[in-house]
Image 1 (cartoon, rainbow, N blue to C red):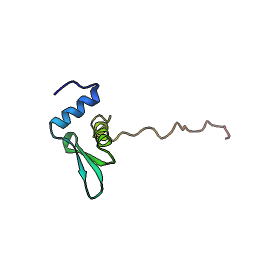
Image 2: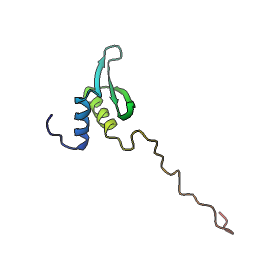
Image 3: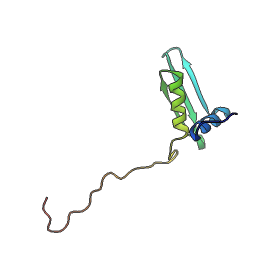
Image 4: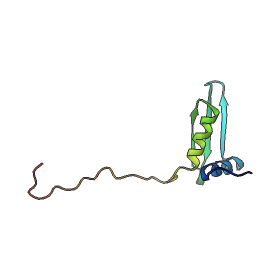
Length: 87
């Protein structure tokens, strides 16, 4: 298969070899449609203006952290006000 420059490239090459990542040109819209089938059948897909951009989106989808899970960051560092404290 060849050697990849980094881990993200390697993941993309594996997905391409297994047929889980694809890019196709749609004449009707004049754009490229990219699709990646992730683990457990989850899919990511979208549109890009160039083929290179479409493969970049595929690479990002394959190497995305927390894929398949909902990960929420804390909404803020708010705490309850101290007793006797006025804003």
